[in-house]
Length: 318
Ligand code: BTN
View: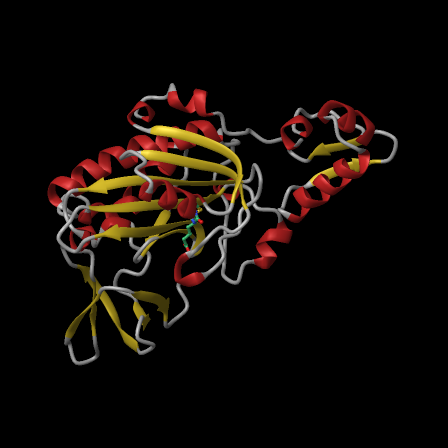
């Protein structure tokens, strides 16, 4: 129904009911649900409904034509709990290496550290990629940093300048979050293993959705003047992911580390890291190890490595 409403025309409840072979009450319920999911509908008495700003919907056949995308088995679904959760289920049932699942709506999108990931039909890009590794899970440390480089390269291609990376896996603009990466792994310590690489990008978040998010956010519409074709963006992301993964599989972060550090939002800045065990660690960010660990320097010049945690600036970024 949202696809029908995004052609720029108004559609009456009655016409929609007829077109989809449902009652007007069902149309109303569906539109309520779409609004609750963040779709911004424009309603005019006597004319009906249309989707504000239109939307470019994902089209698997169109994406598959784009250079680089042919390496993937791609599926686009209208709605799913979480593309990460579904792709992990498919991975355990034997889905092939380089499967990609994209969804227009996630009704239980997952963020890092048990958080919810908010997205909007037509105003976000949410997808996951299944990557199988011969090595064990220990070889995957640093993977999210490599994926961050792919995001950076792709979004720059669409005109997004001054993007920043935040360790371990956020993409920021002016210290506000533009995209997130959630990597979930399964397998043996010695191998083989599988990673589900989930990526969520804010393209155009309405204020009702921004208000639900408990951190500073931005969207591509704020950064790039011309509207983004979501199919082209997904194609480009898959191409850059493919290149970056080839590097990562061959040499870990060796060839990607410099590029990552050049975009690091918190380099040389004082931070507090909330560690997985509940403790925190303060210091100045001085580097990134070969395996992706963040290196901090304390007031006495002592260095420590952080493998997982959440980083906060201790002074306002200027
Ligand atoms: C974060 O920054 O907290 C990570 C966000 C990752 C969100 C993406 S959206 C596609 C994929 N499916 C999910 O449920 N989560 C990831």
